[in-house]
Length: 185
Image (cartoon, rainbow, N blue to C red; front, side, top):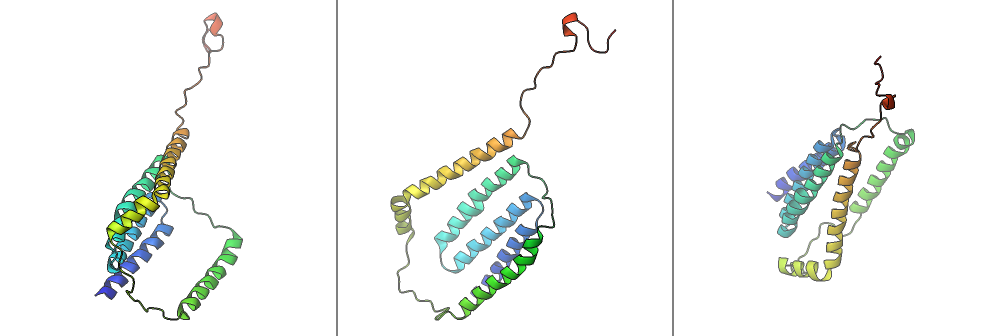
């Protein structure tokens, strides 16, 4: 049963990632990323990592994706313009990807003891994980939250600068000193 669920949600994750890349509208791409994040949460559940699954849903599929969606809406990004790309990327990109995939596949296939899993280490509880997160890693945790806040403020500032809400300069009529308007006799 685990294998069937793994195949279903791994396929859903890969399909969501491909859909993310192929979408023309950024909101649809963000929604595809939500599918990927949710599928990964189910894969974490299958591995027995309930806390990571809950954190994946709450933090990534919830908060971060809401942030991404707001930024896309604030920037008022429309449809993406499709270009043919550069010739160098087309000529070198596909062979480079094939070489990287071949190296990764060779490394995985030749790895000794692949698939041998042992539970020799005790499973970490949520209490121990939270103690590490909020004691030893408190500074990086807070710095990350400040960086996210700065990113939100930057997105708002960029969206505000491009709306054209600047006050207009008043241009006096030609001949305003004589009380005449242009075009009147």
